[in-house]
Every structure is written in C-alpha cells, then in structure tokens.
Image (cartoon, rainbow, N blue to C red):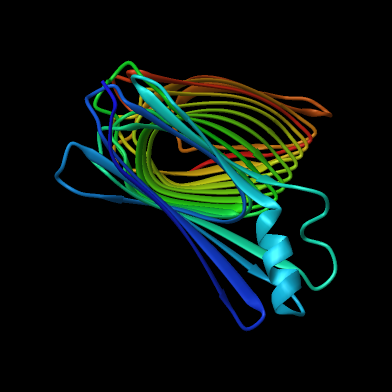
Amino acid sequence: MILLLAGAFSTHVSGQRAEKVINKEYAINQGFTLGIDNKYGEIRIGNWDKDELSVVVTVIAESRSNDRAEELLDKVEIDISESKNEVDFETHIANNGMSGKNKINVVYEVRTPAWINVGLAQSYGNVFIQEITGVADLEVRYGSLTANSLALEDEEAWNALSLAYGEASIEYVSALGLEVKYSEVNISESMILDVESAYSKLYFGNLNDLMAESKYDKIAAAYLGGALELESAYTQVSVDQVSRDFTGINIGMKYGNFKAGLQEGTSFEIDAEVSYGSVNIPEGQFTMDRSNTGQYVEGTVGSSPQAVVIATLKYGNLVLD
C-alpha cells in the first residue's frame, strides 16, 4: 500500500527569479509505480536502501522583473495523483509561459529503491537514471537520457524507450524495446533489443540479440554474441566482431551495406542473394552464381556450422571477413 510519510510546499522570490519546492515522501512496496510527465527541466533518479520514495520538485521561473517572475511561477502547476500502488506527477504550464525572455525550469529529484517501476516522459530536457530493476517505460523528446543500469529482475519483462530529436546513453540494459527518430543512441551492453528507427545513429557495444527495422540510419556494433534480424532501407550496418558462437543473422536490406568481422573459427551456413552489389565471404564449401545484376551464394563456411546467415540485399554489399 502507499503511505504518505511527508509533504511540503514552499515559495521563494529573489531578484528576477522565483522558486517553489514540493517535497513528497511515501512508504512503498514491491510492484509500486512512479509516473512523471515533465517538460522544460530534468528528471533525476537516484537509489537508496529504503522502502521509501522521495520526490522533490523544484520549479524555477526567471523573467525581466520580480513581478513577472512570480506571475510566471504561478503558470506552473504540478498535478499529483496518488493511489494504492502508484503515484503520478504531471507538469502543466499555462498560456505560453515560455515566450519572450521568460524561462522555466522544472526539476524532479527522486530517491527510490531500484526495484520500483517507472513511467517517465520528458520534453525539452534531460533524464538521469542510476539504476532501475523494475520496468522502465521512458519517453524523451528534444532532450537526452543517461542511464547506468536498466537490468530487469523479471526475465519475461521488457523496458521501453521512445526517443525523438535527442540522445540516449545507456551503460547496461537487459531487454529494451526502442523507438528512435532523428536521434543518437549509445548502448554499451545489452541482452536483447527490439528496435524501430529512422534518420538516426545507433551505436552498440557488446550486443547479444538484435531485432531491428531501420530507415536512413547508421548502425554500428562492437560485438555480436547471439542473433541479428534486420529489415532496412538506406541504412549502413557494421559489426566489428561476430562471435564464433553466434546463433544467426537474417537480413533484408535495400540501398545499404552490411559489413561484419568474424571471430577466428566462426562457421555458418549461408544463403545470400545480392542484387546490384557483391558478396565477400571467407573460403568455404559453397556455390556462387554470378549474373549481370548480382550474386547468389549457398553453402557453408567453416566446419560443423550451427548458425545460419540468410541475406537479401538490393543495391548494397555483403561483407563477412
């Protein structure tokens, strides 16, 4: 159940700046969800070893005079909805509060056990997360996400991130559904990613499994340990090294190249058709049929292959070396 431990509200005016602070504390249990919908500011999630949730909301308004700063501050409302297993905060800014020389900054400082579930939406600002082991449902527009760890305790669950016109940097994530437009994403280590992206740059470090639909992107990974499935157009894909224990690659690409380095001893079956491009793979037991418009390759590379490479490319090259 939710138990309100404390609540406080204060207002301060100084110079051409006005400020108000809302402080909420709750006793929480496993399965609890925190929701924040914010704009023009930041959401900062830090952890502690208490079964308690602390949320401090600081609203800062700046304008050309004290009176205007106070008026601007009054345009900002923080709606709070509380129920047994969830609390939701939503920032409302009335009537063009950000026009002219007016500035509003709304900062949520959160302390919580890592096991909480979160639903965070931030527009025109940044999100910082230390660690979440519950489910994280994240949305960032015109801002950035920085997360240290999104390691789900529930192996059947998925995190979600919707990112547009922004940047995301994640050190570790177990399972993530990712929607990206006009953005840049860096994920150092992941177990499974399901990606839908357009007009973006995606950089992955140690990647286990990746499923992706991509248009007009650049995708680069340092290491692939498991399986890769890709449908793309006008996208360039590179993998520095594919593990000898990888489980499969299945790609359909138009107007893009796929290039991957192979760990020594890697073996696989291959069924690849390339139109208006070329195939470059290590020596093996395969047939390669050439035509005026492309190449078709079927057979094996290496001994005792367990993995399969299936590739269909149009106006692009397939390179496995």
